[in-house]
Image (cartoon, rainbow, N blue to C red; front, side, top):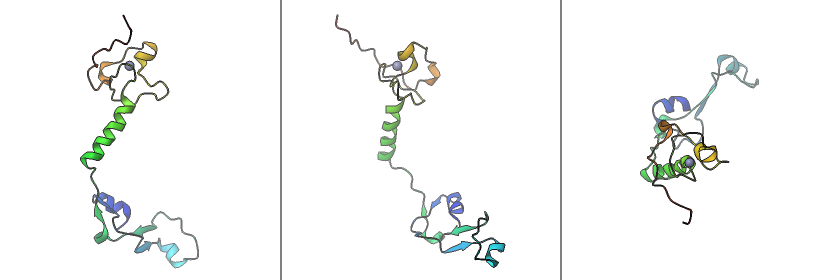
Length: 119
Ligand SMILES: [Zn+2]
C-alpha cells in the first residue's frame, strides 16, 4: 500500500520504518540505472504495521483551542472572533480604527465592559 492508500483507509504508517518495496514504472524497472521521476513510482508500506490515525485527545484539543483563542481574541475588547486577528494589531479592527465588526464574525458575546479609566 502506498502512504496515500493507507491514508484513505484512515491509517497512518504506524510502525513502518521504511518502504518494503518500491513501485517503479515499467520503463524504469527495465532501465534501473535511470533516475526515475515517473509518478507511478511509490513507496509501499505494510498494512499490518499501519496504525489507525490518532484522533486528538481531549487535552490536545483543549490546548489547540487555547492556542486558537489567543489568536482570535481581541486584546482590548476580549471578544473572540472566528477568524485569526492580525498579530501586529493584537486587537480587532473595531478597537484599532473603529471599523465596525460584523456580528457574524464573532464567536462569543461581548465580554462585560471593563472600565480601565479611574473616575
Ligand atoms: Zn476589539
